[in-house]
Image (cartoon, rainbow, N blue to C red; front, side):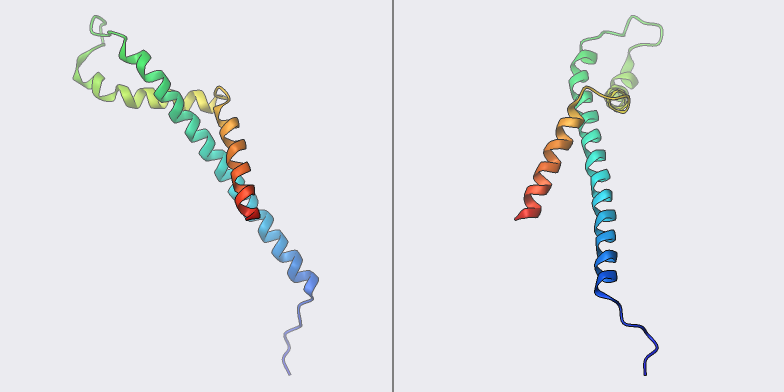
Length: 108
């Protein structure tokens, strides 16, 4: 005879439910992170024209090819910092829409 006890169906269901809730929480975190990253990128793209119109060539440390080359990265990092500090609400809207879409696809 086998010494392995039979698993009760309630235990199996409870374990499955716990795994689903952990998976759902992880996917929820991923959706939040994606929404924040989207907001950071959108803010960077909105800020870029502002930096394109500023002439830094007269400044002590301004101008040159190096500044032109790295300016876009600086603007994207600025967008990330603004989003990290709370942003302007884009991430919240994107998160809500993504959750809505996920729930809709789960029903189908």
